[in-house]
Amino acid sequence: MDSISSTETDKTPPIEQTLADLHTSSAGMTGSEAQQRLQQYGANALQEKIVSLLMHFLHYFCGPIAWMDALRAAVLALCG
Image (cartoon, rainbow, N blue to C red):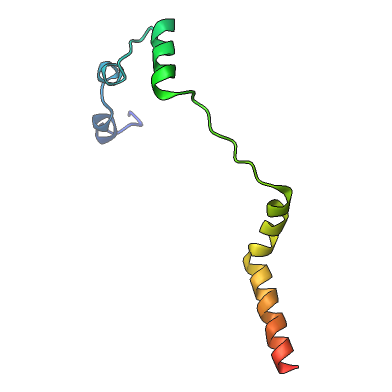
């Protein structure tokens, strides 16, 4: 008995269709195609987000426990 049902395989397009959609072949891209896509789409990399040490430190005080402590302090100050 095959572990993949027929409904799962029906959803997957044939490899030839996928390669055609991506405008490539099973042999891969040539160097010139890769260079052209690099210029068209840019590098396949995420930009690193730079956060200052101060903001990183202050981020620790933005959680639910910090808010509960502030609320508790305010209630205690009011009730005395």
